[in-house]
Image (cartoon, rainbow, N blue to C red; front, side):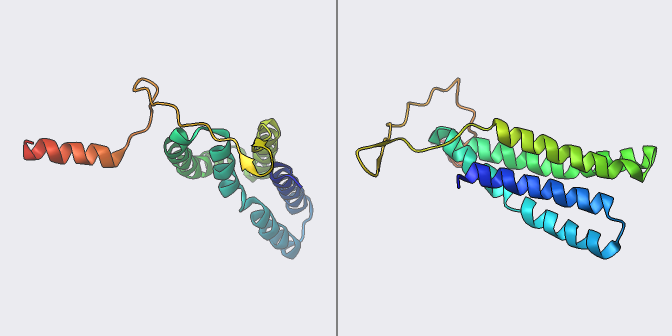
Length: 158
């Protein structure tokens, strides 16, 4: 089974677990479904990182993965606050539909992701293109090592 399809199945199972958590009034059943939902959502962040590295050229990997991690941390801080504020203003009844909506949006985003495959020539040898020369106006990578070396060199007066 293709990995993107597998992750889409994980999201669908997480949506079903969320529905069961929302609709079944038993505390024990709800606890089981929340645990299962976390189990199926857990592999998605590493999957996004792997899919990103396959979709983008190598010289963008560090920048994009760093940016994605920063957005993930920001979202992990901002979204619970926003949803909590919404629940405080409108009541706790908005929590479950909001989480379900986020899961459906996540599924739609995974469905829009392009298929990723390695192009091969004659057997198992993947096609590899030489890395394209970096252009300073396109480079969004902030290389901290080079910046540090430059700062040290400048401070020494060399």
